[in-house]
Image (tube, rainbow, N blue to C red):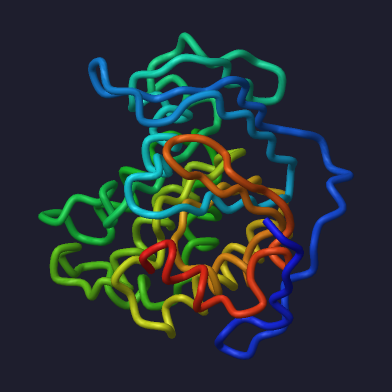
Length: 257
């Protein structure tokens, strides 16, 4: 990929300050593959994420982005090594990986229960922590104040943006060490994109490592430190966001965003 520049995101916000990768690699993935039965959808993926760093996984539909996150989280069958802070999680099931500090927010807010209230959904997220649950809840309200007002509303009655806030809040409530976000902006209004961008920036500043699977190039460029590009299940390119496209519309068209 040629050297390219994105000086500003499309919403006019300044580019995010890039990390110097001086932090410790908290998540190390080696030779990761993912498959459904005999069909391999991604292969030979090496990925490292440092404490306080956000990395975007870009690629068109079918490139293997969601499958890669699922494999890391233990929800999709695969091979390779997943290490969290030096501990090998490769043989652990998904719930054990979650207990160790991996949190996945699936595509289309797949971790919320529509029939339960906001309060009940957040309670599910808080079950995995043993102390200071009130402080954890207040942290969620600081990020997404609207959730405090909607506590008694059924999750299925929330707007798409509110559901995404709830989904992220539930994951963050567990105090993970690595947050995996699968297509967080899909189908949402630009105003919600801005809120999610600011949330990612704040969580990074707090020391959380984040992987974001996305097709929205301007959003990714404004929120993360590095990107990897998947094509046909393999890494085709990688770099910093200002190496993407000077005219992000071209790349967005390629990605189908």
